[in-house]
Image (tube, rainbow, N blue to C red; front, side):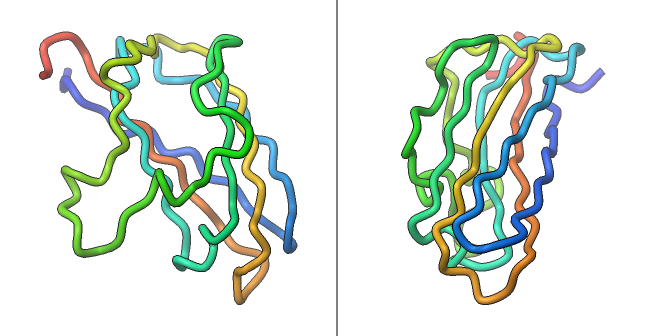
Length: 126
């Protein structure tokens, strides 16, 4: 088995200002959530948009956390795009997560799809 897995969580925003509830379980074959990245179709989708997330009832990102802190542009190497969660020591192993994405109202086109990328690791990775 590989020591790193990227788990994708897709969600759809149908209208300006919409709040989208997202629920998922992490892959149970991996020990830890070590990073997160949020991809949107355009940079405008991040303007004034917020994200909050709890895992196993524990707050990871508080309400009002701006999605722009979880995103990069194409000039950043793919290996450096993830917001590090290494120090938080968040267990994966099939844990349940609840999240809320709040659209900032600046997308040119609705509906649009967003993707949350979780970087899952096992102990053997640094």
